[in-house]
Image 1: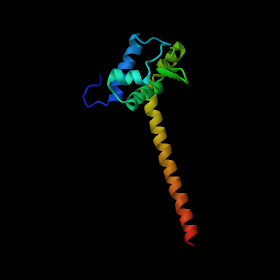
Image 2: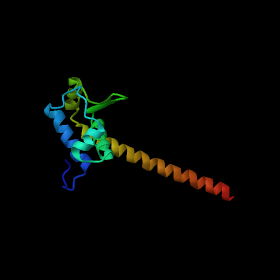
Image 3: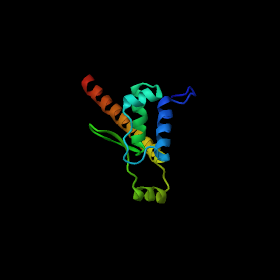
Image 4: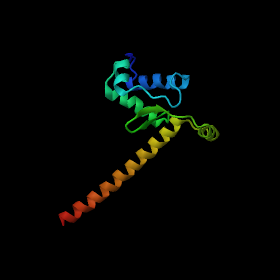
Length: 125
């Protein structure tokens, strides 16, 4: 059940599912309940549930299989060791990716503005 705490519902659902995965009640290889089942369980819309599951996918905790469902990802000890050696957590990796994407979008936006300006100068001549 989503609580009215001011925290978005999809984050509350993701937190609960993450806790179940880390706590072992949803072990590696286990399927997540369907989107409809999760929506009913948490009394949330399908889109809110999809956002929560998408967040878990981005974190690498679950993986979707076309036509089969979404499953808890098998843990790979080598990946965990690498993350510890580098000293980055998945959330930090995502934050870094967001910064890179924002920078790329800004660059592309500036380049597009210059192209549009040149085109308008040519058509105005």
